[in-house]
Image (cartoon, rainbow, N blue to C red; front, side):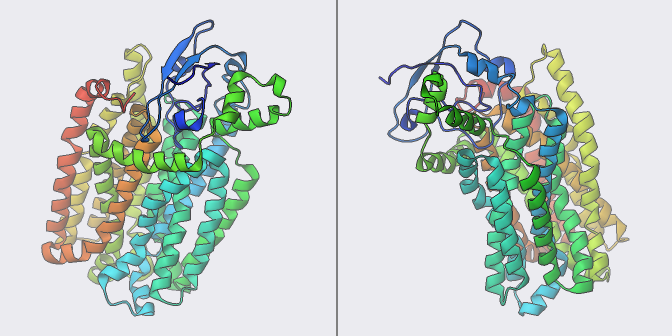
Length: 532
């Protein structure tokens, strides 16, 4: 039996980072969903026994006897705790993280209006290869989190964000001067690896700063980047490419990354509680006699990089295939993300060939889903948040993950409506505003369902980072794959038939299951050891 230690449960914004040794410790997730503050507290004078279970093979369980410790009680009100920062400081951090998260998706799609020009420049004759130059960025989004997430756990979120941004900047410059198709694809991939950091870590930074009842508005701001960034990027990319050439797309991305690096390095501070407390413990280690038991164990029980990598590689896939709720929500999010990038890959063909738009004017068509995403922020911050808080108030002030579902249920029908509208108006070559409006309805529905799914995964699963990582990997893989076969599908089925097929998949996965989760989700969570 593992030894028992007299310690106080640290008030980290994670499950726990206190353990006798790495082989017996529960590894902290890089993106954290906290329990409500009243559940984190240990009442004064009480003891609490905690059992740790592990996904890793050949690991023993440890039992820890938890005792109150004044230092950890003080952490709840400590000004160094990000939850206790002023609102001004919190929103400064959130805006910088949102800026990082905005630039990366802009980079992912800014070249899409210029795919014909890039194909001509590099003599690319395969529609699959030209789509690959765009979507390879999304493959990097799928793989990058598996490494960057663990690094953020070890070294904190801030410097992983800074260095990844600089890494992406360097390869954006490489894309600008790529001598051939292969080098362009390789440079795009590595630029995407760096760009995946804010998309992976940013949600954790938001959860570091606010509890689950307060974070919806900040999450809506953060979520604008992944969904609005691609639309605005393509609008700008069309005019930039038309006036001064495709190379300037990558050069401007590099300039934006450089400016965000200056702001970020100057003003962004570490928000990840476990790393902050570890740094406090290291500074206190100069006088070992003043170290509390919990600080001593924090210093002695840091897990190895190997252990953290194992957890972050294995646990997301375990959650994805062992939890049906995680799977179906991730699948729906992945399908919509795939549709989004499929639209971006086929917009140039539709608006330049069918409607005879110039490259710059064709880029304006991307404002359709962009405006939809902007309008959705009002829905998420005003209506969705009020629904959640009202249901929580009826439940004695205690929120449940299922309270995120009504906002999802009301918005999900808009996704197939937008797809039908876009596909058939394009098929019949109606006025050019008709497919743009359809794309806007789709963008609105996409964003209105994306945020409730993200918040549900954060609220419902013990290992929130792994649930988010599973959804991120899944959606990025489909975002990578869909544009590769889009041209062939629409050639065989037409725009109307193709988008009707996609709308049918959205109906099957997006309308009945949220209702089922709302009514049955709590009972399912009660039977699972993966959920809270």
